[in-house]
Image (cartoon, rainbow, N blue to C red; front, side, top):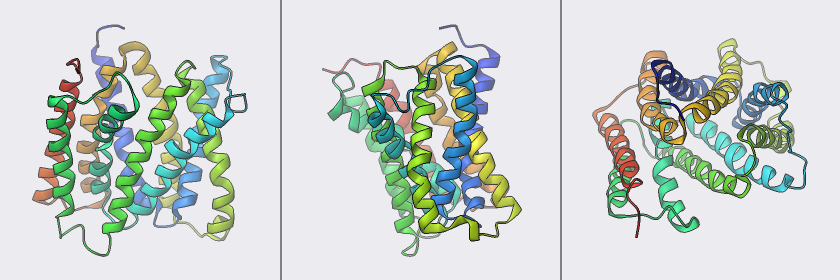
Length: 295
């Protein structure tokens, strides 16, 4: 791995912006599309640039190989379910709240990794980070201006979506010997195939008369926030490694809150600011704790 240069930081910030921009674009997409349709089309369009990359690099896509069931399971748990839950939840809450709730993913990952891996145990420093981070999430739910009895369930669904991301990530350890591009293309293919019948039979998308802005946002979600974002992630992992790429976790919620304010005029209350700070601080402490060997 090379030392990070200015261009590498530019790519990192660009990746954070693209991933963070997904939240307000999901909100715009919900103006015209149902959550199943959003999830399906996001995965379908996101698969296109990744599959093209695999063909360009002559990487075999093993979606229907002997390990198909792993790809199918990860496609459901890491893509189909969280994409659906996030789209369903964002319809009723501000996109900036979704950005903060989804930022809890590294914290959830730390907890689950303690129980399901042998080399990622929780230590005292990590525990402090987890407590601070999740206290920010709990504090966010006390913001009666933005979360109330009418949308609290939607907020919980987004939080559940972040947990499914983590579970899907743990499942990928089962096929960690395979190339990232192959795994990503394969799970995107399976995610599309599994969501398609639900999308057709439940939401009947052909009956829609979508707004132009919703359609543009949906296309953006697929090609950029899913497909192109994964390609940028591959670039960072190859040239700078996982530790450098993990810094994106600090930037996504910050950009998510700012973009929600700029593009959707969303309210940023004092509790949102404090919750955002607590979550980012929690992630920072957890990552510091990860450098200490657990006993």
